[in-house]
Each structure stands twice: as structure tokens, then as C-alpha cells.
Image (tube, rainbow, N blue to C red; front, side, top):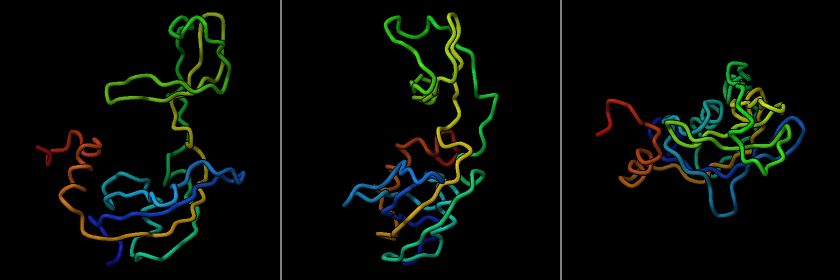
Length: 163
């Protein structure tokens, strides 16, 4: 079976940046599984493996617009210093997590002042070219369990097709 819309796909992958730094990878024996074209992975990854079969491999680069987009200055916000724990020495580059209406939201500190902290809520990989090495491990029709897992992941939250 080939990778196609609605198929359940598992991949072994390594993700690196232009610098050569590995930022993510599947663990041996634990491929990443997802429903193809369901919005669970970035469009550039799906486009590169579309039509492949189990056992095939590919190396490719995904431009920011097909990954996490470019950084958006509107996602840099000023927060009150007193909203952080008093005993924490804040430094640029530190990553924290806030709780938003749809769950956890990570952010990175850009600047620290006496009263205010500039926080960047852009995805950490926004603006980055992503270099993938992928092996398609499995392609099959999704099971009822796969469909339940997709629904439980919140990927279709708010859609009209959900119960």
C-alpha cells in the first residue's frame, strides 16, 4: 500500500537544522505514527512522503512556510516579572510553559527587565529550514483505535464531523 490520504503511516526519522544540530528523532523500535493528511504533522513532511511505500527512504528539506512558518512579532509579548516564581533567576533563552485554553503553550524568554519580561510564543522552529531523513516503516488502513487516538489528540477539536 502507498502513502495516501487517510492511510495510517509510521515513520522512522531524524530532523536536523542547517547547523547540523539534531532537534528530534524517532527512537529505535518506536516509529512516529499518524493519519496521513489529518493535520498531525507538518505539510512539508506529508508532501515529501506522499505515494511512498513501506521500506522506502528519503532525505529532504522543508522550508519554513511548509513547516512552522516565519516568526511573528505579534507573538512576542510583555509579561509581568512577578508572574514568574520569585526564586527563579530569569535569563534570555529559558523556556517556560503557560496554560492556554487549548492546553500547554511553551514560550521562550527574549529579554528580562526589573518589572517586565519579553516572552516569545512562536514555535521554537519557526523560521527554520528543517532537514529530514525518513524511512517509511508502515502504511496501512487505519483501525478504529487509530481513529480514536486521532480524535483524542484534539486534532479535530471543533470540527463538525466529531461527536
